[in-house]
Amino acid sequence: MITLKDIEEARQRIEGAVYYSPCQPSIPLSEITGMEIFCKLDNLQRTGSFKERGARNALAQLPAEQQKRGVIAASAGNHAQALAYQGKLLGIPATVVMPKYAPLIKIGNCQKLGATVVLHGKDFAEAKTRAHEIGEERGLAYIDGYDDPAIIAGQGTMGLEIVEQVPDLDAVIVPVGGGGLLAGVALAVKSLRPEVKIIAVEADHVASFSAAMSAGKPVRIETQPTLADGLAIAQVGSNAFEIAASRVDHTVIVTEEQIAVSILRIVELEKGVVEGAAATPLAACLSGQLPELAGKRVVLLLCGGNIDPNVLSRVVERGLVADGRLSRFTAMISDRPGGLADLAAQIASTGASIKQVVHDRAFAGSDVSAVHVLCTVETRNQQHLAELRTRLKEHGVETYDSK
Image (cartoon, rainbow, N blue to C red; front, side, top):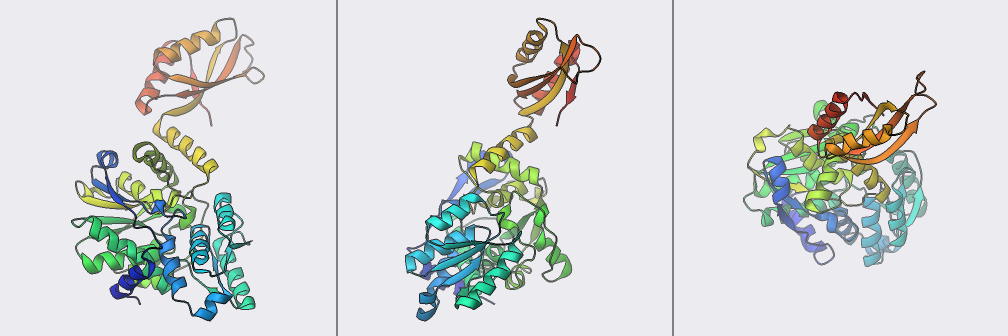
C-alpha cells in the first residue's frame, strides 16, 4: 500500500521530466453541465497522456543493472508511449507488447520514440501474458501500467497538482480502467481534502471497477469494443482496487453514444482533442447521474489525447447524429422533371442543408413514376430536424428513417 509520502516523493522524482499541466476553468462546459468545470489538461503531456507520471517514477527507481537490461510492458498504447519516451530520456531500453487492435497512431508513436513494439493477442490480457514471457526470457523488468505501486504513486501526482490549482474544489471525476489513476488521485486528494468527492467513471462496455465493487474484489469481466480503448481492462488491478475502493464516493457508467457526444463537445467548446477515455468525465456530467454536483466546483481529468484521426472523424459524425445535427432519411418523390428540385426547395425553406442525395430507382417499388431518394441533411438540433420532417409531410412527402 502506498501513502501520501510516496506520492510526494514521486513528485520530486518526476519534476522537470513531466509537464505540470494546467487546470483551467471552462465557461462553455460549465454552461452545458450546470457545474463550475475545471479541466486538468494532461492530454498536453509530451506523449499525450498522464501515463508519463507513473512511467518516469517507476523507471527512475530501477537498479542501475536493470536499467541497462531494460524494461517491458503490455499496453493498449498510452503506457507504452510513456515508457518509450521516459525510457529514452533515461537511456533505458523499452519493449512494449500491444494487442493487435491497438490504434495505429499509438503503434507508430511508440516506434518513433525508440521502443521495440511487439503486436500480440486479441486483447490486453493476451498481450500481458506474452510480455511476461518475453520479460523472463530476456531478463527485462515488467512495468505494470496500472497496478505497480510506483506507477500508482506517479499517477497520484496529478492529485497533488489539482489540489494546488483548485484549492476550493468540491469533486474530481476520474476515468477508471485498470484503476491506477483513480487510486493515485483518490489517495492524494482524500489525504489533503477529505471532503472532496471522488467520482469514478467507466464505459459500460468495460465496467470492471463496478464489477469489482459489487464483488468486493477484482473480478474478470467480458469486455466489448469501446471508444474508450484506454479503459479496456478486463480486471481492475488488485493494488489499485484496495486503495481506491474506500475512497471513491460514487461510480458512474456512461454509454458509447455519451462518450462520442462528449468528444464532440470538447472539440467544439473547449477546442481540445481527447481520446474516448478522457471524454468519460464530461460524459458523466452530461449523463444526468450527478445532480448533486449542480453549481459545484468540479475537476474533469482530460487525461489523454491519443485518438486516431480516422476514429475522431467517425466519432464526430456519430456525435452530430446523436445531436440531431446530421441525419439521413429516405423520401419518395416524383421521378418527373422538377421532383428533386421541389424536395430541395422544401428542405432549404426550413434552413436545413443538404449534404448528399442518392437516387434509388431499382428498388423504388411498382410505381415507375416515383423514385426513392436517400437524403443526408444537416440541421441545428433535434427540434430543427423534427420541423423539417413535419414540413415535408405537410407537402405530401413521406420520409422514412434510413440506417
